[in-house]
Length: 360
Image (cartoon, rainbow, N blue to C red; front, side, top):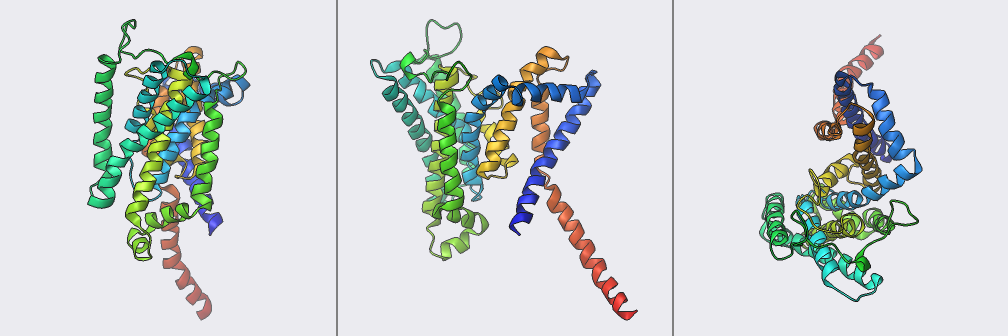
């Protein structure tokens, strides 16, 4: 049964990807390019060339964390849709401390910025967590609305109190050199990626080897039964949301200190690292290993878009189209539907054929 579930999850992940690439290939062919050449060029430069692969891993780091932040709550049927806002909050506070604090050693400065980002993400997640756990308020609505509130607050702060007067666009001052995560050996990677892998290992153990992981799965399957069996569901909801917020805040703070170095209004991109994390978690089946693979794959798509725009006539926005197609096809559970059809056929025809065989 375990192997069947793994096979089902694998196929339910691969089929949407194949369908999205197939439809995307039709669009590429209509533009006048060979889809196989375009996809081959993109994947070759991002996964099969050393420097390109390291760049892919670098940009996958925040996606792994936001994917895990989504996965730990979605596994329990708790929908933290505020990962984007929590990630932005963590990035902003890390940036402010990065340029405000002076005279610190790099280890202390970076540690303070990352810790502040984690705490900010936890605080922002605590509000909907308490409302959900103790007042039965719909967490999806609260976290969605908080995203917009956080984005607007950070926009005002970036335009007024923390704006860099020397910048020609809305941005904070850059973080000090002592707070920057420098490149490792001249590559695209920084210490942020090894830190992300350590967090991934920890979350893998939490999901699969800990009491909390078992409780998360139990709450997701049947919260009423979990409560009746002695599990304090409200407290576990708060714990899960705090972990999700911490992962989100770390994603924003780490990306700030390793890539952006200043807060701008387009810091997270479009649609945003938090929203990308949701797609990655869905693609990975909300499991840590699946999220890791999906994040690297999705990062390859994002980083490969520049290669497509430079070396082909296909606009790099094709990646956004493929992303939209992935969301569309992920809403269809292909194998479950097929399993249901086959079970109906089996129930309808097999008993009859057995009777006919015994009668003859």
